[in-house]
Figure 1 (cartoon, rainbow, N blue to C red):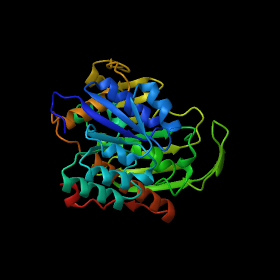
Figure 2: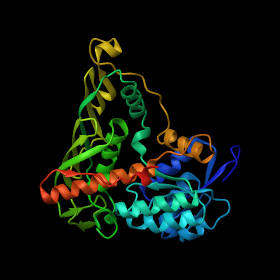
Figure 3: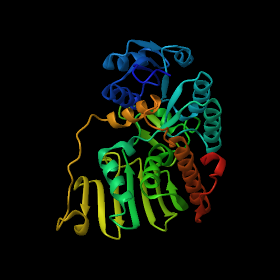
Length: 352
């Protein structure tokens, strides 16, 4: 790993939309250089590399891991490739930022975590929504206890659906809207308000045939709609709506939090963050705090780079990803059984 004063060398594996987010965030964070971008073909990697001024492209992701000038890798490929690539990165001694969902199953997540621990390789899973300014401010307020206990949350994740065919291929992904979009909401709920203990859910596939924006057509039996309710360890209740069929989308997510001393809304028609808690804010009605204006992804990648430099302790985002995967798997079980399902499955040795 590079010394604290050195520029970190980063390799990015994958050239989709999420790779653009990571490259832009790394460049905005300063102190690191994306040295190489790997994709299946030069035609796939080239446009993204030129857009961000990445000097080199590769068609063999293993070549990225072999480079001495690469300290860490971003793995942003279809879910089914995560395990092989992450384990190879661990063996090569490269720190990892792994795109969500972490892997195809909780068992695969456990294997990646165990390998990284044994090799003492830092492993992070990318939970981009945690680093939005409104989420950071909301988390600080909830942690302070000034809003009192959380009683109920409502979160909605909705988009018109992915633009690439592989998202609808069960051989390449861990699931449909739950695993590709809903896991963001699951992580936010856990990150802000605590562990999810039980799940009641239903899912549906309402568009088994769809046309992508570029005219390509796909068929899929994966769920494109899901409704779930969660009971948190502290007793609060959560409703979670997930959709790949909303034309307008929700601009990442919408979150409503109802606490004993007030209500907090994130990313709604009232703005990025709105708080109705007169005894806390001193405002008679809705209070909308000023939030820092920062480049998209800068806060997220600054934190990652500071972890790599040893300025911050490693975040347990991989363990959080495993916990979220267990929630998603309980959700699928509930949809099949039509019963409330316990999450469970997090052993003490995994959390240590």
